[in-house]
Every structure is written in structure tokens, then in C-alpha cells.
Length: 360
Ligand SMILES: Nc1ncnc2c1ncn2[C@@H]1O[C@H](COP(=O)(O)OP(=O)(O)OP(=O)(O)O)[C@@H](O)[C@H]1O
Ligand code: SF4
Ligand SMILES: [Mg+2]
Image (cartoon, rainbow, N blue to C red; front, side, top):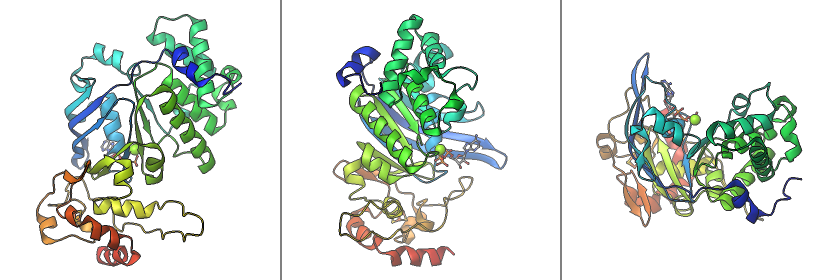
């Protein structure tokens, strides 16, 4: 039965490896598009400490999946990739094919939103997990099956369902099965790219609760990619906010999401307000007007300036670097020293409405 295994047993049964340290330094990815080269990721650096969860957040098209694919070396051959991706000190980007085979899925595993495509429709789910384990490790079928049962219990599926085919599962169950499969090789770093986006809100909550247990029970290092600030607040230790291929703010999730220093983070925060406490009025939902800049010709100066209600002439001329803004926090904003005032004004719908009129 799901949940019948004592939590302290998971580590032993799965033979968990220690969590890893990830340091990404100056990552740059340039795609070749029909209109020309697109720098989808433009000098991104961050760190995931062992056993910690980093939230990578930003709106659609800002480069989140490109970062994740670069970490797994899953980008198209035509993409030019620069910088370093150090997994416990070893640069994944510099590895030859053999070394990469040993690292991919064994040390770093990926969960995406397209659960349907990750499972073979004509093979029983349990056999798929067992095959995946045995393709990478010299273990017998019975041992691999026992591990699959443990993983199913961990993601909240009855181990008996290992006998089923993917079409016998609901969408949420399939996504759990995919998570179990991604965990089956005990990688020390788990990348979850919008793992719940395709699911309904109740299922989203259940899957995220399972992912939280995985962090608590297995102490994996993790990157959670999402456009939902609420998910970051609930699940992440630290956060990196991306805008147009860059990180514009980073730091402990509890600080960045409560006291953001960058106007874009303030705007994102408004677009995903927290649930109000009892008796409190629901804060207004305010969206940031305009769209991400065209990466073929990004604006001079700050890339957020065309949508920023606080932009000055300096912002439109000078590109801001990511600099310390508050203890443990960094922001790429010339005026981060005025963040307190920005937060006050940023909470008012008029501030963003005026900007919306200007953008129009
Ligand atoms: N194979 C590709 N060739 C050319 N451009 C690409 C390719 N893949 C992505 N891009 C472009 O790179 C930019 C970043 O895309 P990416 O998928 O990384 O964004 P994302 O933040 O994951 O967005 P979403 O939230 O929608 O998943 C976008 O402008 C996108 O159009
Ligand atoms: S640098 Fe200027 S335009 Fe960019 S976010 Fe800061 S205030 Fe806004
Ligand atoms: Mg994506």
C-alpha cells in the first residue's frame, strides 16, 4: 500500500547517493533561428548547494528551459553554448560523450511537463522503470522491481499499479510515474521543469507535496522551474528570477519574495498574490504590461526598462549588472537602493496601469 514504507527506510532501500553541489558560471546559449542568432541565455550564474532547492522563475520565453537543457546537454547541435556547469567541481559542458553518459540520469535527472511523451505506451510502467534502472546499473530484475515499488510508494502510487500500461493512468498518476522514473537512478541533482503545469490545481498541489517529500526524505539537490511565484515560496530555499535571458534578482526565497529589490520581481509578485489570511482582503491581481523584448535586438540599457514604471534615462542607456542589493540578495537594477519605495509604489495598481498606458 502507498505510504506503508517508514520514511527512514527510503534512503536505505533506494541506496541514495549524497546530494551534489552545482555551480553555473557565465552560462550563455545562442540558438540559430531563421531571423538570426538568439542569445536565449546571456551570462547566467547561480549555485545550488547540496540538498537545497533553487526556484528558477520568470515569464514564458525568458530562458528557463534553455538553462535546464544546457545543464543536461540536451540542446540542439546548432546551439552555441558557453560558460561552465560544475557538478561537484566537474564541468558538464566540457565532458566527452562517455563521461556525459555516466552523469546524465545517474547524477542529474530531469522531470518535464510532458509526462505523456516520457512513457512508452506499449510497455508496462513497471517494466519501463526496471529497464531504465538496469540500463544504467548492474542489478537483478527483482532488485530493480523492488526499487520501483519503493519509488511508487514515495510518489503516492500503489505499487500494484506498476503492472499497468500508461493509458490506464490518469494524467496526475502518469506525472507521478514519470517522477518515480526520474528518481529511479538516484541522481543527486533533480531538475523539475514546470512539473505540474499540465495538471489541474488539486493535482498540482498533490504532486508538489510529493516533490517536497522527496526533498525531505531523499535530500536531493533540486532546481524547480516555474512561472508561479507561489510555488517557489512554498517549495524553494533560494530563488533566481530570470528576465530576457538574464538573472535579474537572486537570494533566499524567504527574502526575495517578501522584500524584492528588483522592479520585475515586484511586478511578478503582484501577478501571483499570496492567499489572503482570514479577514484580510485579497490583494489585487496586477499584471506587468508589455512583453519580453525581442532577443534578436534587445534594448540598450536595462532590458526591463520598456516595462519598468521606475525607469530613468540612465536605465535606458546603461546595462545594470547583478550586484549585492540586500544581505544575501543580488539585483540587476541601477536603483535597487530605492527598493523600499519601489515596493510601496509597486503594490499600487495605478503604478502599473500608468505604465500600461505608456506601453500602449
Ligand atoms: N530550438 C530553438 N531554436 C531557436 N530559438 C529557441 C529554441 N528553443 C527556444 N528558443 C527561444 O529561446 C527563448 C527561451 O526559450 P525557453 O524555452 O528557454 O523559455 P522558457 O522560459 O522555458 O519559457 P516557457 O515558460 O514558455 O517554457 C525563447 O525566445 C524561445 O523562442
Ligand atoms: S535598472 Fe531601471 S529600468 Fe531596470 S529595473 Fe531598475 S529601475 Fe527599472
Ligand atoms: Mg520552459
